[in-house]
Image 1 (cartoon, rainbow, N blue to C red):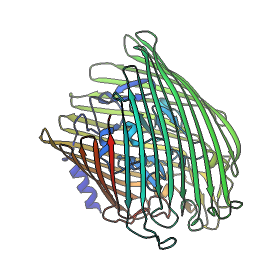
Image 2 (cartoon, one colour; image 1 turned 30 degrees about the vertical axis):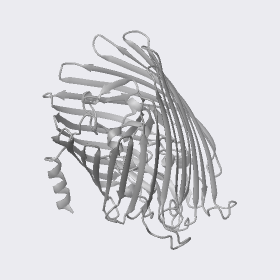
Image 3 (cartoon, rainbow, N blue to C red; image 1 turned 90 degrees about the vertical axis):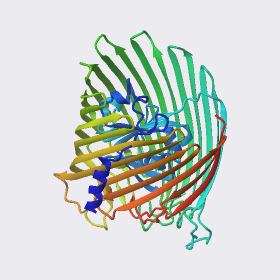
Image 4 (cartoon, one colour; image 1 turned 60 degrees about the vertical axis):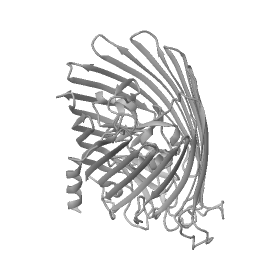
Amino acid sequence: MKKIYFAAFAVICTNFYAQTKKDSINQMDEVVINEGRFNTPISKQNRNVYVISSETIKKLPGRTLQEVLQYANGVDIRQRGPFGTQADISVDGGSFEQTVVLLNGAKVIDSQTAHNMLNLPLPVEAIERIEVVRGPAARIYGINSLTGAINIITKKPTDSGFMVSTYAGSNFEKDTQDTGDTFYGAGVQAGAVLGKEKQQHLLFASHDKSNGYRYNTAFENNKIFYQGNVQINDKNEILGSAGYIKNGFGANGFYAAPGDKNSTEIVQTTFANIQSNHQITESWKIMPRITYRYNYDDYRYLGNSNLAVGRSQHYTNSIAGELNSTVKLSKGEIGFGAEFRNENIHSSNIGDHDRENVGLYAEYRRSFTEKLDVNIGTYLNYNSDYKWQIYPGIDASYAITDAFKIIGNVGTSQRIPSFTDLYLKQTGNVGNPDLDSENAFQSEIGFKYNKRALSLNANYFYRKIDNYIDWMRNLTTQPWQSQNTGDLNTNGINLRGTYRFDFSKDSRLNILLGYTYLDSEFKSARTETYSKYAISSLKHQITNTIDYQFKNLSVMFATRFNERITGPSYWVNDFRVSQAINKFTIFLDGQNIFNATYYEVGAVPLPSRWFTLGVKLVTF
């Protein structure tokens, strides 16, 4: 296996690609990263940030946000149910509670449990790009951005039209434990957009259904999403969005294998956001935002056979307001802002709880010379349970040449325990109301190289998380309990390279190769024998995509390699072939084509080889 890692490192130093401006994962000169107060071209970024574009999303062999993110370098998607059923997300070895997800800059925080954080009513066709920010980012995004942030930016359509798509797929295996039917998955999606000079609207709805891929893994998923943009004039713009998703699924082995073989779960989420941009003067801009999220989680340990026993129902609400502002100075730019968040839960086995969070932001950005850029700032946080905390950070970069830049940053952040961490009362899982919040410190140094067809990023970081929270027990006969297990120190290396071959104006080949190495060690750790989540962190990860385009024919081959701290390593290989004919696109997906046996969470095996055929009509 060491030869594999060495080969991956050698290849990444010689084989990189940068897709065209239209098709790039690293659109170095065009993409502007949204950071709440500052908007920064990615070429000017002082952090380890990269972007997955809408054109790349079209070519990837996945139809959901969860499937798209599993190809992102350094991002760990741990699926319990495939095809968007349920997945945990983490960045660079953190836990699934330590990464914040944002939709157009609005934080999506699930105060019950981050297991439901990716339950978003958002089709991939509505995504313009996904911004992946690595490392503690409290001074930019506030609490829970302990190891990184995923910011999903939706499209602003310029043309009017509609979209209809449908697909069906199978692993051609039979459900021998139940119905005897062949496993399948199918779905349909419809959408319409209205693109005008001063206003843009989009509306998408979808229905996905499957009888699963093994016993009791069937699911049914319904989504609807609306977004409207209105440009009142050159200085004032309003953006509003709202969505609803209902996802019901068989949860065989999700939380308490093997006893939960017949369990089921229903998760419903409503999300609404309205925000605006106002250019008050030539140098002063303000950006208010209001966000609401409601989530209902209904877990049935015995399935639908006996709802009086083993049923957990959780109702959570959160409402948040935020006001950000930037002021351009003669030398530099300052950003400041404030946020308020109220979170409450009504639950059958967590109880009734309520808490508030208030945060204050302050940042200063300046180019001291043509080559030296510096961002410095802090986040001051008050939580009704954990009182006052302050989290400073600084980023800097120095451009040695136009193509080569050195970057460095030091950041801090905090993660407030979820209501599940604090108050859960189940037979097999017990919360701990005395938990301390997690705190992170991280320093990073690296470089970026970008010239013509070649792009390269290389970074080393050191991170320390104090009061790391995990679920622990001494004996298998005891229940799991959340504990501050000690301090987790991580040294990490992240390499990512891209290269583009242009054979002709109609023919090109793009190659991406990424590698992440993580060395994590607990200091002052407790002596419990068993850990539920820490032992499943990644140690080695390789991501690779090879994309060939000839006119309207696209072929993408994607490879993922994961080796966790414990458990076997595995390779998963996928592909997509798509052909556009006028406004129609036909695609064929093959997932896990070499039939690897692998697990990402606990004892939940993921699907064997699966093929999907679909067709899409798009008129905008």
